[in-house]
Length: 279
Image 1 (cartoon, rainbow, N blue to C red):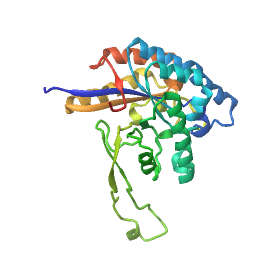
Image 2: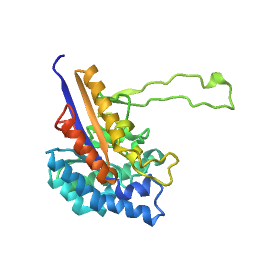
Image 3: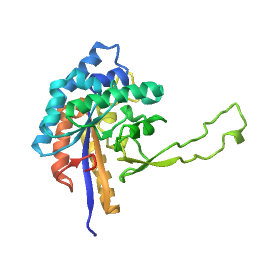
Image 4: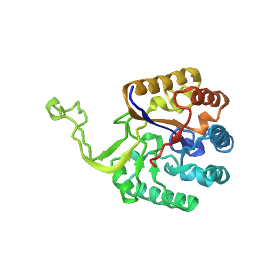
């Protein structure tokens, strides 16, 4: 076996109240907003404590709403030496926004994080991992260096394209009008650190009342096995790869999930984690 080069990282999304406002359908639920408050006030410090225990530096993607609502907890993240990246304002769906709205949100949150951290953010996670057609060009205008929202690869970083086009099926028209291949756009200078729904704590372990396929009671040991299987396969098949894990204080701040991380980190072939961002 040749020498391996593996970059392992935690990306932490503080969705908190913003997640319920923008993505989870809880904007009219006092109870769901309460869960968001728990994530900011309780879940975030617990995840920070986990990272401190294992000397892990991570990248925290913080919506502007979370920064405004939980300034003390976000300051704890910053002061612990973690990187902080962009994650929208209210966890809004970028594909539902106009270009002007996207630009306004990016401008506001970019300036918020620059003022808060004393330096501009370098990376972004699109809320709900839902990118828009305009996203890449807007990010490049602001000098963003990397994105962690797309899935062209699952363990290799790559240069993100913009301008891919495809033809949707229209059952009212002749098939020949829509039987066409995807057309690839142009490669940009934006680095993509791939995201994977299968290495994300939220889909299997967070109950969302308004989601038709919501789970929330999946055994963390099953999730742990899935993550380990991914890592073991990548380690066997590749000499170089990245292994970014996406977590949320809303989920990984819960006792049963925290204990999963405590089992996962020391027992894996890697006994450390590095920033998800590029150094």
